[in-house]
Image (cartoon, rainbow, N blue to C red; front, top):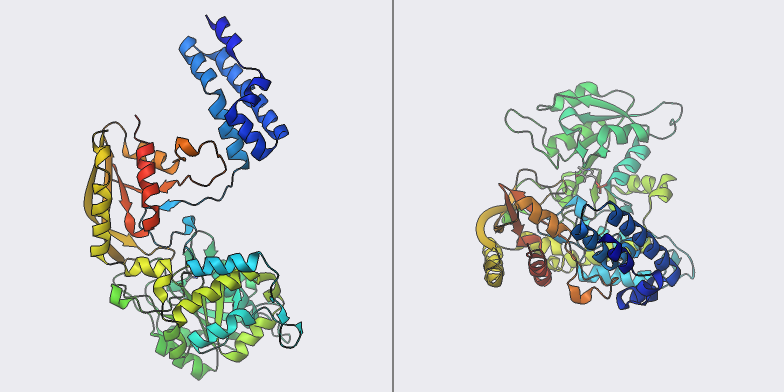
Length: 485
Ligand SMILES: *Cc1c(COP(=O)(O)O)cnc(C)c1O
């Protein structure tokens, strides 16, 4: 019986003549597709040879064409694709943190596709400095000079390198930086203050204990090698209970009396007050600078809502020293980052922060999310006959990305259960969501939107706070596409 099946295996030429495969040749080049066709035919032959029965062998044979299409698509399609973030984590580091505003994206597009005055002074007609492009906007917002580097880890590294590390200064040996043991944080598994400090050449002097550090602890550790007092915003955790930490004002007073600069790694770079939205512990950059901190560092793609970047802002003489450090050249950003950052900062300056998706998501009221969730579930009625059940439940969205630990925004979750699929299976299929069959013939069109969802208590939970309203049809499409049992 199998012998008849072997004769049904199409030749390479026949496969190349089929419309779906011919379309691949037009997109990816015939030679490349021929190689993939040979490869997949080889795999299918092997599977047919090993098949236990005719049904299994036929299934392998019938998978031939879709597998060829998949193989070419996977290999040549983009690796970085848009996804739907239904987790309710606004700044999900694994999902690329803040989505940019439309204005920022447009600015990136324009800068990317043209020559620019990146390092050219148009008035003087000669070489200029690239850091002017964000400097004026940052100065207007923060009231102090600032420079931009690749990310906040780079900002902390560069600032420490300049202030206390690097080559020995005047034969004095490496400088010391005093930091509380309660602030020796790790973020995202790869940013550890002690490691960054060691690489910068600065010597870490830990003071206090994990839960309690007093001003006197800092005072006792001051010595002639001390170059900097460092304060780190413990952004992704909180120590609860018996804790003590000097106020920012006390730290500023201590730094002044010791004649040393105080640096604060703020992490998130929050530029507006989150207290009206129920988020208590997120200091703004402006508050730190007003309190008298000499240097602050923060990220561009966390609460700021812009591109990946790190900002070092503060006292003019110190920022200028950082800018002159030779490593600034190695950590600098490109024209697209300046374009996106400037467009993002303009949203704050013109008092239109709602242009920024992250700000919009934070300000979205509990009622608004609830109304969207109700309407979304109402639109899924047709699926209920096909084994699905959707329910609304009260839940919480979190800011994430190392911001506002332990605090959350009230939300309404859509809980999805299916009669024949476990929550884990639904979650996996949502992640692998592919374009509808109608767009399969255009294998490189980016119509596929994998959905990232939460699973709790054997339920898939979807939080629409982090789903763009424009993505709701794609989310519905993903649910529809996995419904077939
Ligand atoms: C997130 C964070 C960092 C690292 O910032 P990146 O932009 O990811 O490099 C450093 N310090 C603190 C306090 C943070 O929250």
